[in-house]
Length: 122
Image (cartoon, rainbow, N blue to C red):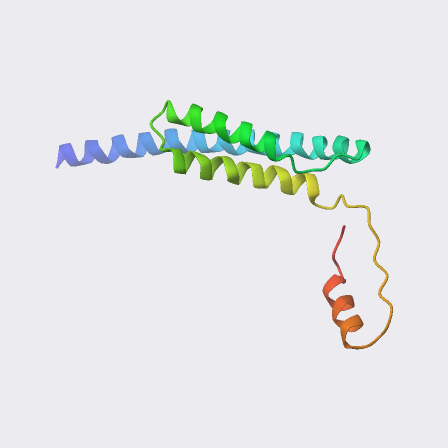
């Protein structure tokens, strides 16, 4: 019984460590997304495309190599890197398109488009 209690205490302690690391990861990814949003503003001001596949490949390779040092398999490392890239790209795109839409007509297509776009923010 004592050994079982010790295991529960050890697991609880280890999980607190994981929770602490998770909080730091969340903070760091949030900071990365903030920086990506700023990069998006710079890219738009320069007329550059938001998506840069060469840069994405570099980032993925860095994550694969870095996580590989800790025994993470390539597929999982790629999945994690792609998720981070998606969040960053989304921050660069969301609410930053500076476009307007004019819907001409009040037929079925016009009404459907108007309903779809109500509340949508470029």
